[in-house]
Amino acid sequence: MNNEKIPLQVWILTLAAFAIGTAEFVIAGILPQVANALSITEGQAGYLISAYALAIVFGGPILTIYLAKFNKKRVLTGLMVLFILGNLLSAFAPDYNILFASRVITGLVQGPFYGIGAVVATNLVSERMAGRAVGQMFAGLTLANVLGVPGGTWIGLQFGWHTTFITVAALGLIAMLFILAVIKTDGHGEAKDIKTQLQAFKNPMLLASLAITVFAWSGFMTLYGYIAPIAMHITGFGEHAVTWILVIVGIGLIIGNTLGGRSSDSNLQKASLYWAIAMIISLVLVGLALDNKILFVAAAFLFGIASFANVPAMQLRVMNHGGEGQELAATANISAFNLANAFGGFLGGMVLDSHFGAGMIPYAAIAVPVIGLLFIYSTNKRELRQQPTNH
Image (cartoon, rainbow, N blue to C red):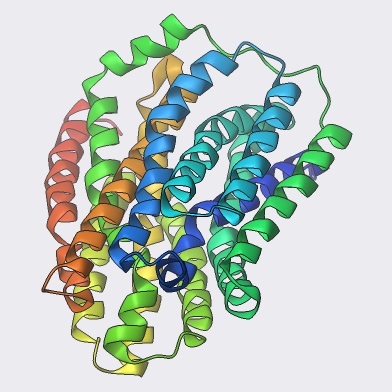
């Protein structure tokens, strides 16, 4: 009987992950307001998603390699300080360029915080609880979509979008104070040396797994990042309706995350193929349902389930092929997700500002995940060939 509980320190990391996740995704809810306030197009406002995501892609692994040798408590505290400053800069940004720069600064925090935080979380529990500890920390990211983004959107509508960023900074401050108070400075396992970690990337299966994440995931942010303009301009919802639409999609994300975890545990190859197909179908359904409010919300909910059900399979596959470099592989996969997010942000913004308009976005979102499907299919075949026959 396993009576071991998740320790308080892991919950603190969950809170920090919640703040960081909210900072990344909240722009989706306040996009029309930011565009209005700064006199830019909604597509340009969407590029703020890409700026944040690209900071994670390139900053994450480099910072993780560099920071891995320092005291973990100090590193996590320092990252939260940078996070607070970045969000305050966003809140008081006088123009688009400074807001853009502030998003890059804030984005630099996410990769190393999740990478190093995951190591700290696993070291706080016994080996058989490691998966649950990391899952618990990442639950902060899922919760950010269910509570943080709609909450931030609501705050933005009531008190202005500047207040949204101030609130996120305040969350970061609370998390930082808890990290200082609760997380111990010693007893963290040492990261493997950089050379050993980089060796893992010689494995073609690891590279194929990262490619699956980039291609198959890119449809998510293409739609999710622009859900506010689509709901308002095409389906005809008022701006206050965006908050609860985001809540409904967020509930879908939690359900998807759970279903994806279970199905990946029972059959990783099948789960990754079927969920990738389900996500593409859900994007088509959203596209077909744009003219009907009830059907649109239902399709968006299904999109939430189908898209996040892909996440555990993608993460698990990368960890399976990560070998000695699991930390760096896990951080690289966060980069892969965000490369997809950055691309989705650009693609959605371009379509939104083009003559096609917001109604074309769900269809445009399908293009790249179809390539992802081909990668999944060929990788599955290779994995099955490599498995011993007496399985």
